[in-house]
Length: 269
Image (tube, rainbow, N blue to C red):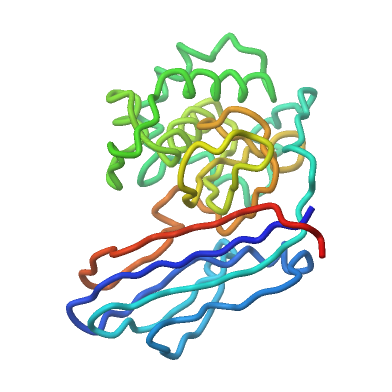
């Protein structure tokens, strides 16, 4: 299946402002790309790229004072099947986990395992281990939080989402990640493109957030906000939580003027 994806984002800066953005698919998808414009800026400015400690592609540049636009438009081959469901996947004992997964058991900026640990064990301590326990966590988070884009707050933590019972996709992901970590299951935060492919269109597209959980020797996709397998995910970045993978990090004030995202299935030709 061929998917076209991209973005057109304009910000206004009161002065020349250094920025870092993460909008390109991870290197694991490089061979699936069929066309790629790269990052285009208006006005045109020099950009450089590097990989962060998670292997995400980061782009550096200085946005000039005034209006500044970031554009990209690409096509990629995606699996036409929904996210795999592996109910037999088992939970790995901590002593047998690979070293690189251990950081995803710890609390982080938005995932306060210390504040949620007792709540998690009270809710999920008797749930079957492995895939079924993670799905039980997703079911609970999905029913507990009401999605409301107008109530988005970039400082909301997992514990606050639990208390307030409202949020956006990042809040669903943070709470489910924190609960998984409390139950000794490595979980990491993922963001990227996710179009309404195979499901009803529910509104303007946005960057999406979900999570990956380490079970039975590999990472598996779970989406506590949508809580169903989806088609056509394009991973841009992953980390401990949203603090590690901001769409755009600005070293100075800026105002968002417009924000357009697209992720659409297209004919293979």
